[in-house]
Length: 221
Figure 1: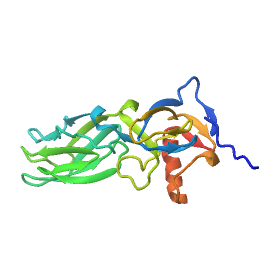
Figure 2: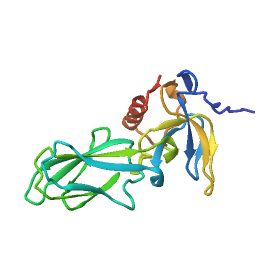
Figure 3: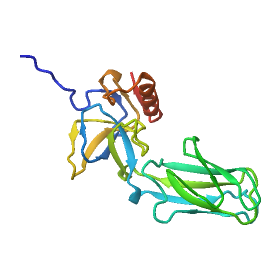
């Protein structure tokens, strides 16, 4: 009889930072069957996320204001950090703003008076006409406790498509109760061959996921 031994808890870890700095307690989403070394994505639990917006001090005097949506200022795919909305096409009583996420990636454009709704949701209103370069900052605060973790899902648009952590030990959740689990969230070396990725992932997609982990200080050897 052949016995197949599964990966032990933390068996994929090559080295960690001092103490428990590499580890984080995270909430595992419903209906997950995960193994040690599983690459995880994360979605924001919107009710726990904070968002605040302010105009740049250098904006045109008397220019308009930005108003975050009251009911849902952020979506599940929002990122922690500072978003920017920058005027790129001025127009009388209008104007177009480009919106950038905290990583500097452009996530869309919005016209003055229209609603922007991608990761964050807001409206910019006109007063004195904007000029090119007028801008707003939107600070989004997402703590580890504001996230639900699940298996990396490349088809997701809610955050699970981005590698956010690695599961330390196997976890199974049902459709009713979430669970707390230990994650490798930062500053660690891991064994690349021991990581579990979504079925069908391409070499390019895996390289992108490894780069996302590397940005967290998680280096695959």
